[in-house]
Image (spheres, rainbow, N blue to C red):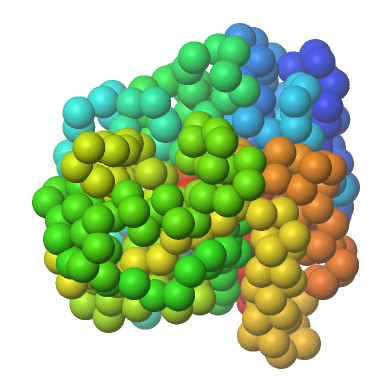
Length: 392
């Protein structure tokens, strides 16, 4: 049996917020002692380490706690953005074990840390495993970390988000047991008898059909379909976007195949990456990912209405996969560029999840990027929501 509960608080006092959210979570779970807990908090709470950790350990009765700072938090009760927020998920189970971990420093040690996490995740062949990772967004290279993890451990599904903050602190924080630090990776490995259903929803939707990169070097695209890359991009700029290139680069992106061998940019099979530079004289586009000649690509548009449609489609898939079962608990890792800044109003993602799946323990964070498995490997996502549903 898996018992879980979630709670949240927007109180400015760290001690009171931690107490309030944890007691809500324990009450929803209907238990007096937890085996483990996750906590996500806005970075202003990191200034009070003792006030943050002490209520968590005391109320749950465990120090098996992991978490990270975030730009915002969410539970089934709603989302908190732009103000103090703290969310807690508690868990007790006789079939699912949880082990928190923390590795530091992270900066320029991504491959080494990835190998350390792989050893931590080593598990018996007869058990399922799931990793939740919360790396420091400012000090890590998540793709290198994921590559090292896969090389050392084989494929162990990993979900999570880059720990971040509102932009006022210039540091992110990672928590494990009684330690609160920065420049680290915190996380939790779950193992045992359970099922994890993972799906993603994109905040950006295709603006073009599939194209082919016909000339490229490293992260520079010279030609698309045998035409100068910038010329192809410029044809997409209409109205206000044609007059303000900075605005255009905030809403237009490239979509690249998640699996280079499959080389598909069909729905659910592409990764969104920023356009980070333009060279008008040479007609070159610079993107935030290495590319190669012959690679498929699309241009994608960040749009709230299309994002809602994609969210509904993802939730419909999750409902179908549940086959009438109710989730024991869920995790939702949402990009900090989604939420109110995408939809114009707060609370859309959590409201849609609640409408589709009903009331169940859910915890989430707004991160700097998102992590999830796709196509048999763990991937780095942007402008994406990752929903994880744990069932018996």
